[in-house]
Structures are given as C-alpha cells and as structure tokens.
Length: 390
Picture 1: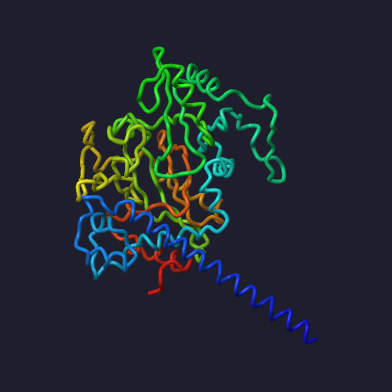
Picture 2: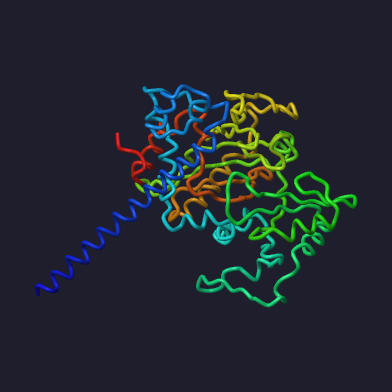
C-alpha cells in the first residue's frame, strides 16, 4: 500500500515537473523570439528614440517599431495586443499549428474546400520534381511516397516545360512567412524571368535545380479591382478568424488588404515596401493604404503611389459572400481556433486561399486602432490565457 502511494506521488511529482519544464521552455522561446525581432531593427535610423521610451516599450511587451506604428501611451497600451503577447499566441493552436506552419500540410488540410484551394502541382526536392498526386494522404491519414525515379522528374526540365505551356508559375518554400523565398517564374518571347529578372535557359535551370523543399503552384488570376490597383503582384487579403468557444462559432477579428508596389513586386508584403489597408469587416470597403515606416513615420496613400488608382473606399466585390465562406472554413477547422488566412479575390464573391498562418502578425491591423478594443477579441485572448482578464 505504501509503495503504491509512493509510486503515485512520484508520478504526480514528475507530471508537475514536466509541465513546469515545458512552460519554462515555452517562456524562454517567447523571450528569444521577441529579442531576435528587436535586434533585427536595433540600428535602423527610423527607430531612433530616447532610451527611456524604448525601455518603456519593452517593459510593456512592445518592439521598438511600435513607437512608429501605433499611437501608444500610458493610458491606452493595454488596449493594444503587444508583440510579446503575439509570441505567446504561437501556442494557441497546440499541435495543429504545424498544419499552418507547413504549406504542404495546409494544402492537404484544405482538401474539403477544393474550389478555394490554390492549384499546387508538386514539390521540388534535391533537384527532382515530385508530383503532388503521389504525396496525397492515403486512407488512414498516412502519406504514400515512392523513392523510385519513375515517380519524379528532373526539376528544371519539368519547370521549363510547364512554363512553355502555362507562361508562369509560383514557387515557395514549404515553410516561412513574409514572402521570404517566394519566387515568380515566367517564360515569354524566348526569355525566362525570375521575379522580373531575365535569365538564359542554362542559368535559369541551374537556379531551379538548386531549390529544395519548394512547392510549385499556379499563378492565381486576381479580380479586376485588384489588378487595377497593382497588376504586378497578387494583392492578397489577410483575414484573422478566431473561434468563440462560448458562442460555439468563429468570427472575423480583423481584416486587411495588402497591395503590391514596384518596390515589393512580385509580392505584396508590407515589410518589402508593399501597401496595407484596413478592411471594414461589415462592408468590405478599404481604408487608405500605408507603407512600412522606413522613413520614421507612416506614409498614407489614398491613391496607389505607382498606378494612381483610388484605394480609399474601394469595394471588395461581394465581400459578405467571401466573409461567410471563410467563416464556414473556420468552423470546419474549429480545432484550429486561431488562423490568419491569406487569400486572393478572383471574382464576384470568389477567392483562392493561398495559405493559412499560425499566430499571424497583427501590426497592420492595429495601425487603425487597438485590437483589444473589441470585447470579443479580448475575451478570446483571455480564454486562451494570452492577455490578463480585466
């Protein structure tokens, strides 16, 4: 009897120790990521500020760039979702975050929504092209692969042949964010292009052959309104959905529209020089756009700086249909309660999901106002232990 009690006590002590160890490891990871991001901008001239102000931002969980992005002070900082809280939010989706961190897994996750899933042809791995059909999950959730060369093709050969047929392809790493590594390849008039740069066939094939762990996808044709805003990038929406456990339904917490520029092309990413605008969650109308504050202040644009097309009050066609379809997806994936959806509007109420994001960056949402001003958003983060209860 005593030995059984001792064993139970030891087991309980180990579980407590293991739980505390995992919590400590997570906290250290959160601080490490926060510091790494701060270091990346530490010597940027546009972030020059008094040391006291920088220390105040750090103490309240904000990176130095928040000084430029947000109108933040002692009276309102609790209404802003801080950069450190964003690091803590990384764990909200538990093990399901891997399906969002890995673009190949996310492609499989989107199988129930084939009409909204980007067409992905295969994988580039060690100089070979692997047709994605040979990698699709089989019954029981397993993945079937074949090591034999009959299931693969030389990567450069496959890409060049299909560029001759289709004109353009998108290549992107399985992992990564912020547009890092995303490459647009095209062919026309006897010339190959990578992100707009011309290459001869030999150099082009050498570059393609060196790519490893890349997905090969279609170039999504965007709707007319988006093409008019800027035609040389896929101008994507970022829509943040959260699952409300009390109401047993998802909701749209925030939405933004990214728009490419000559500086950011062929991607539309904010940190590459692209524009970001807010989206009215009810109407689907755009706010003015702004660019990353490389000059030390936000640059606002009611019209596009390159094309001259009006941005403010531009209407996303059939926004309510798009929003409801996204909510249907978020309800299907209720076990993954926190998703940042990147999508391209392709027509009246139609769209293609490019990828899903775990613990997405919320900077361009909060430029328009604190995220935690929305009671439902605050309750979500409180429920998951990310922000303290009021």
